Image (tube, rainbow over all chains, first blue to last red; front, side, top):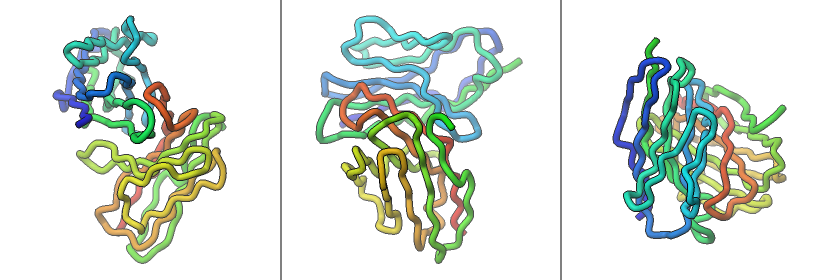
Amino acid sequence: AQKITQTQPGMFVQEKEAVTLDCTYDTSDPSYGLFWYKQPSSGEMIFLIYQGSYDQQNATEGRYSLNFQKARKSANLVISASQLGDSAMYFCAMRVGYGGSQGNLIFGKGTKLSVKP
Amino acid sequence: ETGVTQTPRHLVMGMTNKKSLKCEQHLGHNAMYWYKQSAKKPLELMFVYNFKEQTENNSVPSRFSPECPNSSHLFLHLHTLQPEDSALYLCASSQDSGGALETQYFGPGTRLLVL
């Protein structure tokens, strides 16, 4: 069964420090994509970063990087130099293969990040 | 307008009302999606449309009725809802609905309260 697990319901980080949000996934399909989204209290789901299962290098996007460890099935999000505006819910998600499960973006339960001044 | 827009942003309705949620994407995408986000639950995929054709209905009750007149617009018609249908309804779009590489871009959502 395909599944995303985020084990940290809530995290605190001091402003300007780095923080790692954990995500593990489970799939037997060799072709999959891993995504991180940010959801502020306003509700909008904002796409942050993507990692494909065949990508050789870890994805980076500005202050966001994805620590992809394929053998351990983990895709942790690292936010460097945290800012107050980073306070939000963060969701890890996965899409698998082609065909029958078209459109199925599987989400974890999310991690609430709070950045302290 | 850019990205994915949704109207209304907030909606309160009685169980006997009929209302519609609207989603519009300005990204030139061909696939659109409806998701439901309830408190303390992961996002749940409801419907998928690709090139105006429904390709997935994730066992959604018939009181939710989607409509996709073209690749840029998606509606969710609501009738005789239950209080447990209160949630944040998110619309998303992607270039197409196939494959693991497609990034979905979301709208701001409609917060629905059913009384």
